[in-house]
Length: 267
Image (cartoon, rainbow, N blue to C red; front, side, top):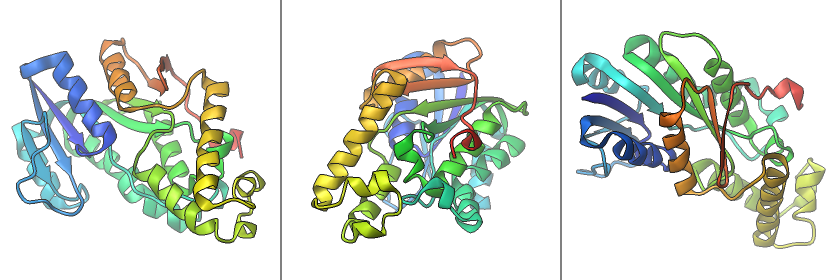
């Protein structure tokens, strides 16, 4: 029996990870899934053997994880993040980056140090395309931190799944902030972003902005419109690959690479 830990088990990526674990390993996998948000008493995460509610930065939550088979896990999937979005990556402040890293990156280091994990899987996106550079804010820096960590040697083996745009908490947050900003397009300093909203309704502007992302992704990576099944397939690719570093998924296209995306090359 192998133990798997999924942090962020109710999210899109966490759900894909659990589904893929069950497909690949069946009942031989023990899955502990953690989630945090507005508590729903009695909530159980489908596919998990045990559901643990709580903030991963809470020492009590970490103690409960460490008590699960003495903190020994074959693979940890770190599928949670929270940080400022809706502003250009280059305009993110040191304070907002620190705040973003508190949930989006820093706990990965703590979990690697305090648990006995063979492989840690973290998540990133194609934050260096023009549209993401204009809106991904502090989260872009957290994702870069993950990518740099991925190619570092550590106590565990490091792997990253890098995905194209899909419906998530971050994408919804960006659209919410853009909807507010669209009331005064002149305040949008990025000319590309401003062009989507001038003389248009916020709904139309956001639709055109998303279409712009999809067009840029398809031109750069060969496909776009990544969905839940594509993310699931990327996890199966992870399990079937020999010593992968980055598993990339953009639409139906999935491929392996070994180089991080560095902001200094694009800003």
